[in-house]
Length: 149
Image (cartoon, rainbow, N blue to C red; front, side, top):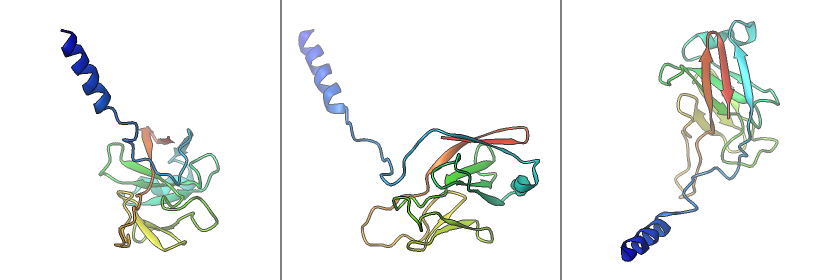
């Protein structure tokens, strides 16, 4: 019995890894909630599939958020941080929206990300670790989209 207990403790200690997360070192993750009422004119585009908006509010994310309507997600919407995930936030890291391609671009190195998945589309093949966009949680109730972290 004692040897089984020692073996169990040994396996638990070996099985625990304190560094298993794949956290982005460039972006802080802090709690916020931002509500979007789609009946307001500035958010009315979010009622059309494939339409995206940028919200540059100081209360939403680090440098604002991008929200897109897509049927591919559970809620019908996805929301991402507007600061490039491959830089410490700085003067060029706030990405710009290109609605014609449903993507955003970071002007620091012209990194391009799709808003449907948050994936970096043009990562250099130099062996460097690149991060996709930081995605936030989205809940929908009636005509209100709540984005939270």
